[in-house]
Amino acid sequence: MSDVLNTAVPVPASKPARFTMSPGAARIAFILAVLIVWEVLGHTVLNANFISPPSVILGSLPRVLGNPQILKALWDTLYELIVAFVISVVAGVLVGIAIGANRIALKSVVPMILLAYSIPQITILPIFTLVFGIGPASKIAFGVSHGIFPIALNVIAGMQTVERTHLTFARSLGASRLQVLRRVILPHITPSLFSGLRLTMSATLLGVVLAELYISTGGIGYYTRLFSDSFDPGAMFALVSVLGLMAVVLNEIVRRAERRASFWTTQNR
Amino acid sequence: MTGIRLGLSSRLIQLTTVLALLFLWYLATTNRWVNPVILPRLDLVWRDLVALVGTGAVYQHLAVTAFELAVAFAIAAVLGLAVGFWVGTSRYASLAFEPLIAGIYAVPLIIFLPLFILFFGLGVQSKIAFGASYAFFPIALNTIGGISQVDQRYLTLARSMKASQWLIFRRVLLPGALPVIVTGLRVGCITGFLSIIGGEMLAGLQGLGSQISRLSEAMNSSQMFAYIVFVIALALVLNFVLSAIENRFKPVGEVA
Image (cartoon, rainbow over all chains, first blue to last red):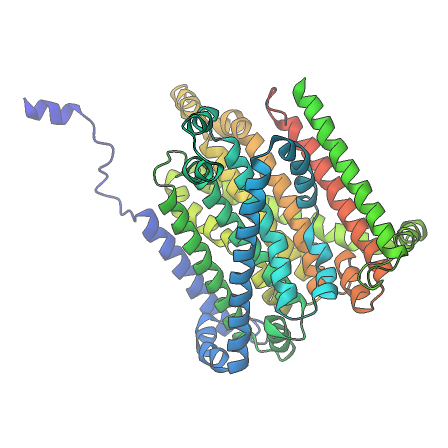
């Protein structure tokens, strides 16, 4: 009886003759293959003045991170990123709640925000350096000008999903405005708030790094120019890798927080 | 009906905002409330803008930027569609490579601009390569996403009628995924344009972006603002035209 069942049901999953990797393993194998090809090409075909193989980049890492001034430039960038992110989030959430809670403000201000958001901000970067100078202030300001839009727009959008009946219910129970905000609105906007945080993080990264690279008299921008002028691709790749790692770690922190905060919603994957 | 009225009123609000800001700009500069280097007089900016467009001084830079964008977009579209179709049509490849592509795109690629400059130089090649790599990701990711949302029943149906791979691609996958793919192409083109302007501003010899940063270094604010206004107007026009094209590919009833 059981034999009949076993033979009658085809089992498509079992293909014992073929070797298959899990998708994750294939991904890692692909990355390793790219690194190996890069390493081989780096020692043979590619000009060492312009591009370095991974081993040389790794070897340059202690030299780059050992330089206290480069280390300071990297810390400064991290500091600017965090400050710009915090300012964007605080200001964006406040603006978003203020606008989202008011129907007239919603209809009148949102078009202006969308208009401002549609302007390619990279073009006005020189104005930021004219106004805020070449120190951290201009980089933070440019980061905020990128970061504030996604969070504000997401909070506004999130507040539109708050169910009217919940609001009416809370008010009929005599909840104060603060209580309504704390107990009804904030839990409701949590998912869109956190996806806004993720977008704001990548926007802030873009703004701060743009300003850092634009200002070549100090900070990261100075060293990238120095390394490219002195044909030192190993140091350049090492510096850029550290920046990239910083971006990955910051993105990952926000992404994890998002997943944690909105685990109970089904719309998130 | 209400949608149209809403759209009209928000356009009106935007127009009023722009006019109010221009008026404020005019007041602040003619009364010298702000340093003219930071905010030049409105009439001087207008004069320089008219001169730029009128004498054709802007066109040689526009030509460079447009050439860079055209080549970068062509490269990104070919590679993005090819990779997107290859990854999207295989379940295994999309499990293995979609997270990789999305993960790389989550890193702001602007970080790698110095490497592009080092490798390709200050000329048009580095802008093309940088713009193409920025535009590649939305195109590839949208192609993968577009294919994945094609109704599986259509595929099963086509296969059960012994449709060839090519026929399935031509008659099922492509029409089903096209609206999402076209969105990816639009986003890729806009992103490519902005990253090319950014690349020119940070390190460039020719093109609209390099003019902005050169004029800024020369403290020639009114001409710099004229270029900024020109580039912003260009971006808005590009966005408008591409959105209009995109809407033609949307199924009836979904036009935004």
